Image (cartoon, rainbow over all chains, first blue to last red; front, side, top):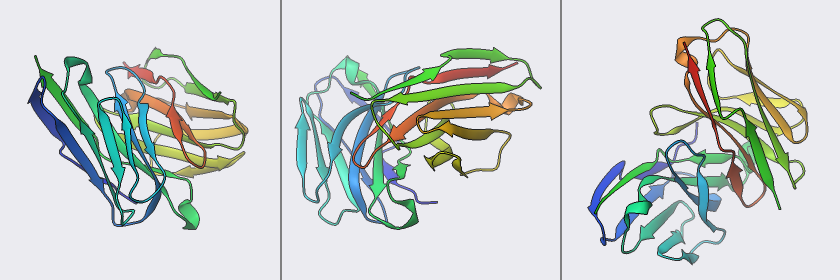
Length: 114
Length: 110
């Protein structure tokens, strides 16, 4: 089935550093979503992107919807220990039989050292 | 506002026993509904996807089944659990522009 390629798979950083992760696809999406999952919890929506080229911020988080509609990135500035978790990207298809269906990336495990 | 309820939060079941996990959504109509399984705290494996009542798509062959008896109710079932069914199960719903997850069920088959 449709896959999103999310990278990196894991990151080990020092507190205060900036973080960048991205997702790419061979297909067009009309919505990009970024989630964070804490251990033992369901993923929580961080940022939603709806237009190609859109740049959206949520506190220290910034995400962009790629101009080709096939990619997106998430940046975290000045990381803190509570940023630890798994980050997922997700896309919703633009049309066809899979319209509205979510497709997820494999996740990025973020570890922040104090 | 929309909310999603998933229960139970944890479950320990013996091999060969049946399973029923329930998910309900409030505050929206005709959502797309999903069941995911997550092993070892990593990727989300899509198990089932539903666009409407009685409409279920199975993404992977497995020992589980899903049903959608009502618009906002999604049930994950098994007649006989296997050890390999252990994992973290997540229900989710999506509308045209957003998607939300339940809190998850930690299933341990012993």
